Image 1: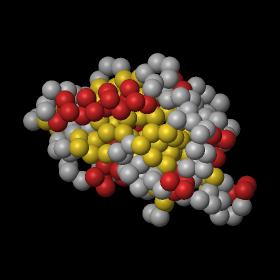
Image 2: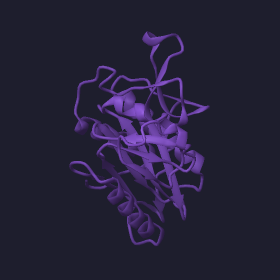
Image 3: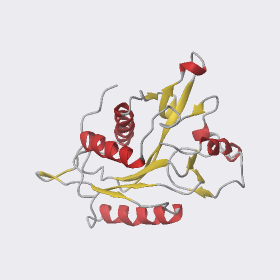
Image 4: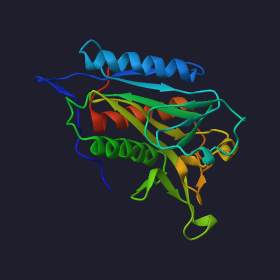
Length: 231
């Protein structure tokens, strides 16, 4: 599927660039959530610009609003956070690029499903730049990669999507597996979906840096959502 129609944030007759920030090192999850809450409140009240914030976290598991306790398979392996985003269990850790996307849907069309599709298209376009064919599935969340070497129907998940919307401002976002320790996913049933594996760019043979991924993410984001401001 091609890219959706751009949903750039038009305010009056101008398009305001989205702030683009990249955190150094590993970001504590609680700190990240507190910062998102603050920015979302500011956007909703007209005091803050829209923002995309790229982070890496130390190893941890998060539970979305639909998480089932039985799908946390390793209860004492990593810290566990209950969060208000949609979805079920996810893993975050070093080597995974998490992008927290704080956009004002009042300015972009109040259509949450369309926004989720745009996030998926952002991931698919980014993966294509690295020669990876990412696909969406109607019955499964996230972005998937076919693995014919594992079997005729084999597919692995390479990216997750989980959002929350407050006062029509989005937060949380996407997680793209660049080069995480894939064994860490064994402590959960990722997103409640069994019978499939998890992969990464590195697992698929790509040899690059997180900075390389960030550059493509930013370029692909602009094509779908509109311009970004200085990092």
